[in-house]
Length: 526
Image 1 (cartoon, rainbow, N blue to C red):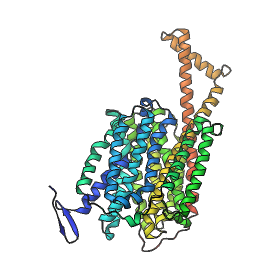
Image 2 (cartoon, helix red, strand yellow; image 1 turned 60 degrees about the horizontal axis):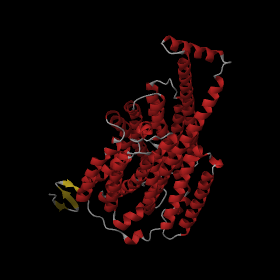
Image 3 (cartoon, rainbow, N blue to C red; image 1 turned 135 degrees about the vertical axis):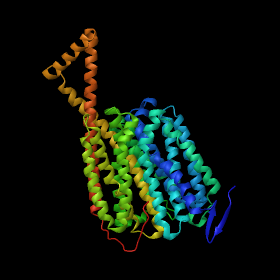
Image 4 (cartoon, rainbow, N blue to C red; image 1 turned 180 degrees about the vertical axis):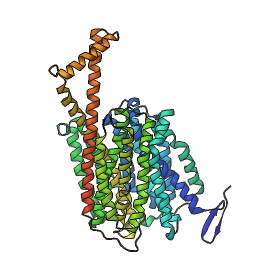
């Protein structure tokens, strides 16, 4: 039985200050929902076989989650004001937990995609509301502690994702990356219901929900991502479906902007973009997020499908880089608070672009130690970009708009992550086909080296007991496999070069930000 009493203005439950166990409770949801952003990436190669999906299809396991989260984040402010933050958090946790079960049971890609989309809707409610609850329960002079707790959980979850996903997949199967959410989330859910104080709705702040803008934004997001991810498969402008989706995206986005600008009940405060520092910081976050989420998608595929590492080994290889990212986030936040955030962002962006280009050295013969070092370099350089870009954006807008500014940045990050994943898959697919054609052109009877190697392999297989025709087919299959692996290796290198170019655009964007540190102003890093 829970008892409570007050000492001064601070409530105690079981002798513990309310703010501390409230922080633990909301961090359970934050940790589990953010864990699902990286725990899935490492298991995608295993899912492809079980769900009968190719690279074009499996990307939707990632994209659907991020786009669902982005869509629900556009409405979370209104929902929180309408029904209260505690209730919004609980509903988000219920959605996330139930959909974790559905994803674990998914028999095909369609059910998995639907489950991940709805699961993302839950994540989009949990994470921003968890941050708001921390703001509410910690006094003003302890806001830094509150955001430190949030930042620790938010960075630890993605760091542990690859290893935990590898362990579960290696010793059980990939479905357990979803099942593991259920017991932990249920504990957090019951703790929320029993221990978190009910929050009062704010009808005046909620106002009227702008359903038209919400639907237009949802249509715009979905049409953009479908034509980006399916364009290569359907034939781009040669496909009526792709052309229709392009037109739908342009029209729906234009109508959304017009409606938001004219409405008294806007979903997102677009007037914030009139501040050039805020606008460029959000654009920088968008470009940067395209690059990192594209890389997050590619690296497990490279390690597992190309180099043949087990899921667990791939997770272990990625762990040091993930830890470097977590350290970079903390260090970047501290430095951005003490020094000019623009310079922190600029140096980090330059290092990040160089590190992304360095990943293009991944090949079929790259040593494990080299992969680990390059991934540490990559993760460590982009870690400080998150907090520094956030400080740049939120330090230049009124205090009353900080929550909205944070929501805009998070939505841009999620949409950009979906776009970056789609673009990476498209480039990888097109480059693989291109390199297969080019290498195959060199393998012909006139190429004495290639033909001699083919004959030697065929002769070796015959000495092992294979009939001449069987030996010829086996040798041809081996050469076909070798060509595909070599082409895939070149395609990964080419895709990382393109991601590096996108990373350079982030450098240019940050360079043009005109920002001076405001003395005495401290913004929590979201």
